[in-house]
Length: 156
Image (cartoon, rainbow, N blue to C red):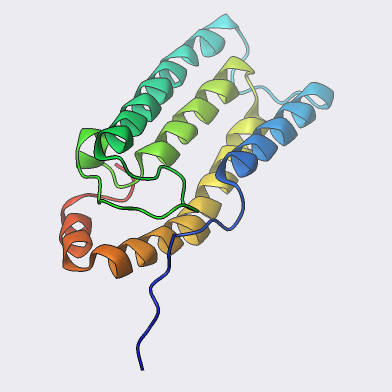
């Protein structure tokens, strides 16, 4: 009896939707029941740094996928294991980039709620989505992925 290989990793729900719902939920809560991280303009200015870093990391990860001509989205089949660009340092630079963008938004809005939702969203991805993707990559690329996984951390 042979085990069928998955065609794609799949997603427990659309990735961007989970991040967006948490962000919008936190922003709405902050609008009606403000709970500031730190009052003042400096916390908002500080938010620009993770926002810029998130844009850069996401752009770098996208370029790496484009160079290798493989699918970016988890519901499409991967044709090659990407290990260059930001993938040299983290196995999940896109989720890391979303987290940095989210952190930047929390600081820009000066919202403890958005910051708390970031933790929830990252835990959901760490426990539900990433293991699904890693099982798929291990099935698809075998020892090549296991070797990569042993050398590069999940986050940073």
